[in-house]
Length: 246
Ligand SMILES: [Zn+2]
Image (spheres, rainbow, N blue to C red):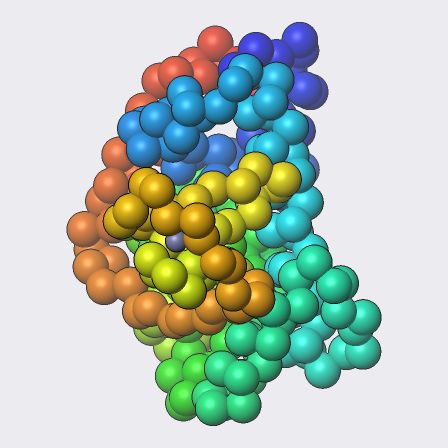
């Protein structure tokens, strides 16, 4: 990444809280290579096309976050038609589980390790308290564990909170081929068909159907160690800028 000046770097990579600048959890996690993601981008027609898809799917992701968080907070919300299947799947899940939101979209700081982030939701889910991170990805990746471990570690500095669990709430929507079982997703205007067993199938697509799953992430010790190692690497990468902040 290239930054024109120090303010630009600070805004892009962190938060200033009570006059102290902290790097952001998602920036730190971003230092880790993601080969599957590079493969995906390599399959697109151009760099520009990739950036457009990224921007549009980020927009859709934000919309899902805002809608789900409003539902959890019992605030009135209009359901955007393009994400309705996802919201329907969430509502079904929500009717089967007790979710009490304690904090939504809140800033969390680790003064001990020197980083900050914004959590989606801190909630009591079926009687246990933990980080509920909303993802609109097609799968639950191991990388998510580094991010949630960073939040859990930061919250552990608050003596009023119990030890926290980490959950990924994955929300997505897809059409399924009634003939061959392939799935079709539209992420940011990029139509992606997966699991085609028969390349010659004429595909008869179902209605768009939402998916909602929750997964508890295990291995906190392992994940926080990886996160702090990523932080060290991130600081190495950005040394020139960080020297200007100190
Ligand atoms: Zn098919």
